[in-house]
Length: 77
Image (cartoon, rainbow, N blue to C red; front, side, top):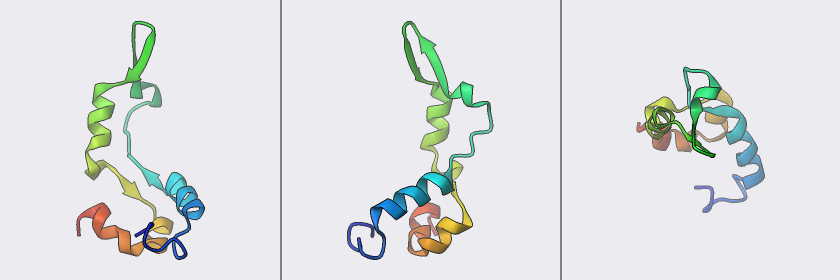
């Protein structure tokens, strides 16, 4: 959709809207998203599992209003 209609959905507008209106609903402290392994910082496996489950992702009303065509892809409806 974004590629097929760049005039209707300019990437700079989409990118800003996406970054400000999409959430993964992480219910824990933000510091729990990563863990230390030696000298490295890696994603916490529980966080990775949470992020990979699309049911944990939601979008705001503003995003839905701008991209109603995308709702079926996001929510499977």
